[in-house]
Amino acid sequence: MSDWRSDRVRSALSGENPTVLAHLNSSIAVIGDVQWLPGYSLALTKVPGVDRLTDLPREERVRYLADVDLLATAVESVCSRHDETFRRVNVEILGNADAYLHAHVWPRYDWEPPALVRKPVWLYPPDRWTDERYRLGPAHDPLRADLAAEVRRLRSSAEFRVAV
Image (cartoon, rainbow, N blue to C red):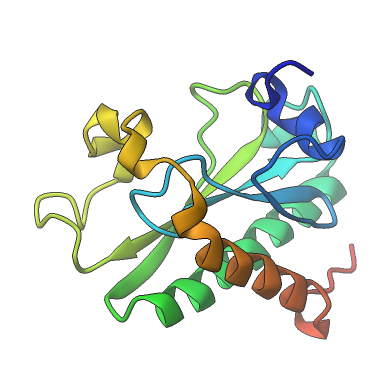
């Protein structure tokens, strides 16, 4: 694969996607390419070609949503330890720009600009997606390692075993 970003699901399944945190039951937990809100993560479907949640059979949808819950719980736990101004987690399944099932897990913080802290993250300036200072990089390695460890810990806990 020339660029893992051109097919994030297949590159994650093949081990070529460097953002992978862990493989879950029905999804792959990844850390976001951008980190203007540190800890931003996503749950990618494990089924290439699935565009929306309703493309999955009901039992698989429930398993996928349980994975999203697990990832959101991990992000909340880790981000609250890393930053005392952690506020909450927002979870969104939009699919308007990328045609594969994925859920965004956005940590939110009290230090965000007052005009944006209570608004959807999509109201942030578009340069947050392209500005190099927000790119995932070595400075995020400790946060990334903690997220991966917490996802693995929760995955093995009885609380997050889903029987469908």
